[in-house]
Image 1 (cartoon, rainbow, N blue to C red):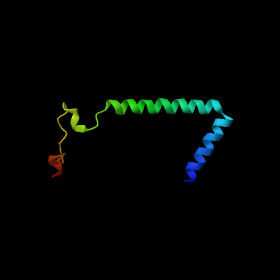
Image 2: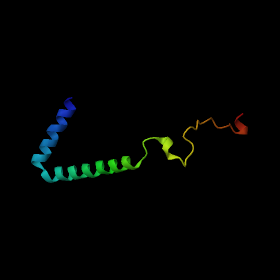
Image 3: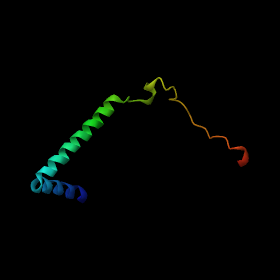
Length: 70
């Protein structure tokens, strides 16, 4: 909880003392979360919807050991 309070106080101090830095941080955060929103809007919600992959129910197995390790 104290970390969150310190973060808020730090953001307020940056906004008051260095408005250009705060605006740059704000624009960078908006661009990042806009990108994240676009990625999640494009990606399917379920892996089984991929269709062309066909490996949604694949269960991996151990690879066989080489001849020299048996």
